[in-house]
Image (cartoon, rainbow, N blue to C red; front, side):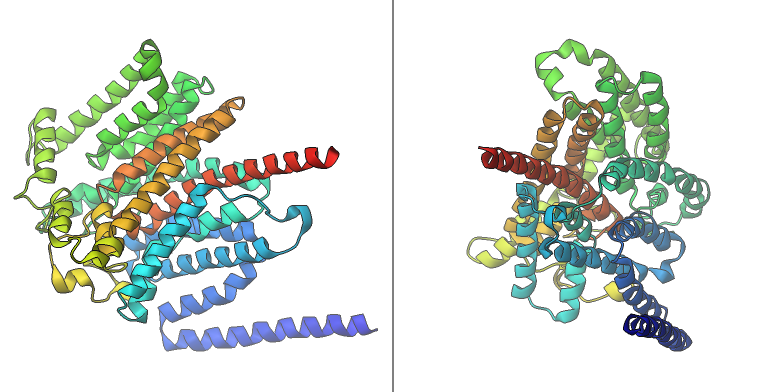
Length: 507
């Protein structure tokens, strides 16, 4: 009888709670604040979704990889949804910590955390230290930390939690289909939005809007480089599958056309270097020891590179060049000349680094070591992200945060930049270790080998744009890649530890 009354009480409570929630949401909606409505709905739905960690993971990935960028381009008035993605990521961290400290026997994720995990922790600590040392109020503190770690929950959840194997095994397929999903967006952006931007002036490059779901502004900047980098990360995995004879050449060519078509039309010239890095990383051993084995892949890569240079030169023929050689020369001039700025900024990708050295010295060590705080270099922003910053006050229109390297130097200092390099270095080494460890599993080994090339591509982007410190879609890719590598390292170390313990107990 008692259990019956308890069941009835639970049922009544659930219905009563739902009624209260409905009334509260109706009142909030009547106020007309979309931001408040979305945030409140997220806070209510979040704890419910936390019951199902796999659903929470997919929601966070979809929000970071698809929704945030699509909203930025097509529904800019709803950009507050990016904070919803950050909340979902935070809930992933909470769920991971709850599971990490729970006592669930063999199901608990008792594993030795890899060095990659600790490098990420170290970087987070220096960002927090810089935030507190350069205190500019609670709002800037929250916005700054959100900019850096808005999807870091993906990384921590993958490393700490004990996921069903089917979830982890599904991730490469999900990323591939996400890459294919870029095509319809790229087609629409190229056919309809690029013509609208032609002749807009004010430094607007028409093709920059071709960024898939990575985020763009119809009459502003775009994340075309981020799209290209992502496509090359996926492309590198398929090249590695072909190298290991897991994928036939005809399928590689077909998939390459799908993956690289956006790269040809978005005119991100750094893509040529991405291609070279993918080739050199995947075939580094053959290049040094068996160069005759790189003839066919070398021809394949050379054809793609030649096509890219020709298309880029053709697109820019009426503006800065008439052939690929002119394009290369002009690009070098734009990025390294001491008297040429990038777009509307006074500095370019090289001088933004040299300018930091001019403004910092060992006589004033703390700004040089820990920087001026997160988001100090940002000169733009919308919605909740709009706030006065160090760059706006001290160096307006200079472009001190043009690249991630310069942004990290100004915001987290030399220590923060070194730690980021350590993260990518550890990820590169981890991918190599896993590729060797799984050499008997050609598919899995190829994935790790391709991801190693992907790490190199992402490291180069640090010198090209500042996406590492604010772009939620690109940060999602980074956190997913790092988390995927760290998961397998932790998993294997846990298995090795378990095997050793069993042998000791047996003895």
